[in-house]
View 1 (tube, rainbow, N blue to C red):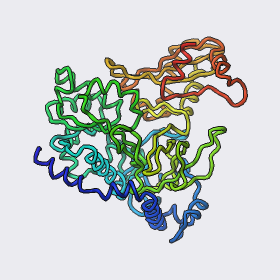
View 2 (view 1 turned 60 degrees about the vertical axis):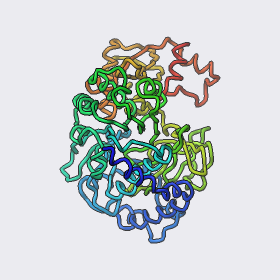
View 3 (view 1 turned 90 degrees about the horizontal axis):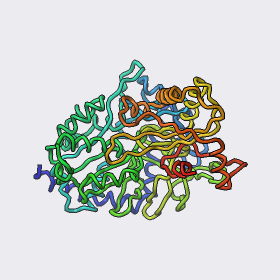
View 4 (view 1 turned 90 degrees about the vertical axis):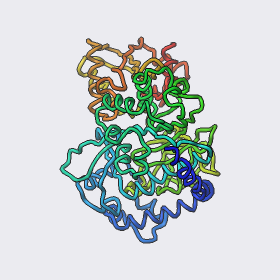
Length: 501
C-alpha cells in the first residue's frame, strides 16, 4: 500500500482553505450555517410548529425556540423513527444513533441524516486528517491501515425501515469506499455485536498487518491492544506494529489512560484528542503539545453557549460564538443538519483561546461517571440506591462514587461506592446485586459495559463510618446551606481524599 501514501497525503495537504476557514473565518461561517439550517428548517414539522420564517434573525430564533433536551424533542424523534419524513430535517431519515439514556428513557435515539454525515461527520474526519498532515508533513500513515474501533448495528423496537446502531457503526456502514479500503480488519468483524468475539477477531486479523493508526475510545482500545499482544505472543506493540503513528481518541477522558498507553505503544505515537458524539463532531486537537480542541465552526453546526452561574447553578441566556469569553464554563447547545434544534448535549466547555476558538471539555452539566463510556448520571445512581435500600431494609445517609481505573496488568475497571447508612442492609451482597441490576435497567451504556463483566466489574461497596461525610464537610467549611456531597465523580480526587479520613 506504499503507493497510496503520496497521493493521499498530497490531497489532504492541499486543503489549506479548510485550515484558513477554521482558523480565521469562524464567525462568518457560523452565520452561513445558521442561514442554511433555517432554510431547511422552514420545510419541517418542527419549523412550522415554532414559526420559522425565510429570513429569520438570530434574535427571533432565540425567542421562538426554547432550549431543547432529548425529552422535549422526543415526540418529533418518535415520528422520525416510525418513518415520517420532514419532521426535524428536510429529508428522509434512514438511521438513528443509539446513545445513553435520560432520566425518562434507558436509551436515546439521535437522528442521523445524509446531510449530517456529509456536512459534519465525514467533513470533520477529513479535516482532522488535514490538520494531522499539517503537523506531520512526512507522515507514512496511508502506507498502512487503520483500526477504527466501533460498535454494532442494533434492532429497534418499532416496526420501521429506519436502522439503528452506535454512531461509530452508522459511520462505518456509510463510509466511502476509500475509507473502507484503508481500514482493518473488514467491516463484518468491526461491526460484530459480540464484543468478546470481536475483540479476538480484531487482534487475530491485524497483528500481522501494517497498522499505522488506531481510533476509538481509550478504555475499549486498551483491551484490543492487550489482546493483540496476547495473540501475537510479543512483549511490545512496537514489535507488532513498528509503523504505528497515531491514536485518534475520544469519548472519555484520556488522562487516566495516558500513562498506560505510553507504556504499551511506541514512544513516537501521537495521541490526537477528538470530540465527537452521537449528536455530531465538534472539535479536534490541532497542536502537537497541547490537547485543547479546535472548535469546528465550518462543519454544518451552529453553536450557542449557556453560561453557568457557579454560585447557584442558574443559567443565563444562551449566546452565540462571538460573545463567548475565556475561562468561563458554558453548556454547549447545537443546531445541526440532523434536526437537533438548540439542543443541549449535556457537556460543559471552557474556551482557552478565541483566535482561533479552542476549548476544553470541562465536564457535564450534572455530575457523572464516564470513565469507560458508561455515562452514569446522578439520577441513575439515586434511583438504583433507593431500590437497593428498599429490597434490603437499608436506610442511606449519604454516598459518593468514583471509578476504579484500569491498571497496566488488568483488563477491567469498575465503580467504587462509599456509602454511609443509618441502618445498614441486612445482606450487603444482595444490596450490591440490586444496585447493579437497577443501574443496568436504567442505562444501556452501563449495561453494555457490565454484560459478562466485559468492561466493568461489579460495583464495590465500602461502608463509611458514621459521621464520615459530615466530618468531611466540616473540614471543608461546608456545613449547612446548600452544600452537599458530590454524588458522582469522574476522577478519584474526592474518593481518595475521603478514604484517607
